[in-house]
Length: 173
Image 1 (cartoon, one colour):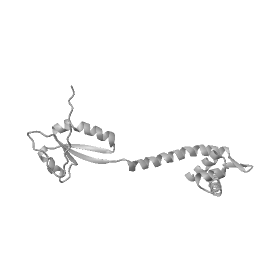
Image 2 (image 1 turned 60 degrees about the vertical axis):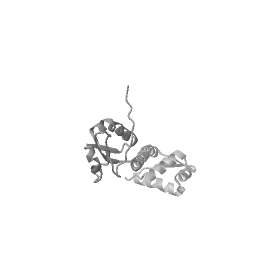
Image 3 (image 1 turned 90 degrees about the horizontal axis):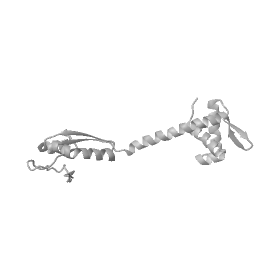
Image 4 (image 1 turned 180 degrees about the horizontal axis):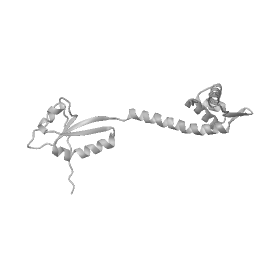
């Protein structure tokens, strides 16, 4: 027994809308195509799913049970499609940040929190580096960015590949 989601959707639309014509309009099919979908389901299951009542059709008990189950399947199909679609909308990356000890304690927690909330798909690995070696470490790309604090005892980082971000620290009283 093979249950096709299109056929199941036709059965649900038939039950919800009350006629083959209305189901056909909702799905963008012809009335004959809806009738064929229902007939194929009946053959596949070996059960009668509809009965003719005048010019209309009504679902049998088997048709109603199948339509109820189909609703769950169609809902889960939508969830699966949305989950896959959301993957392409998420940004993901792996970043290595070279840090000097004082910069790690001063700035890293705030940076990590911002990344976690704004870009949850980004994973960060910090590597302790000497401030003097930070520029050289970025050039061959073993790390994405150095993070250091400026000190009068240390030279500033100068490289066209390094962008300086000035920040203000607030001291808690």
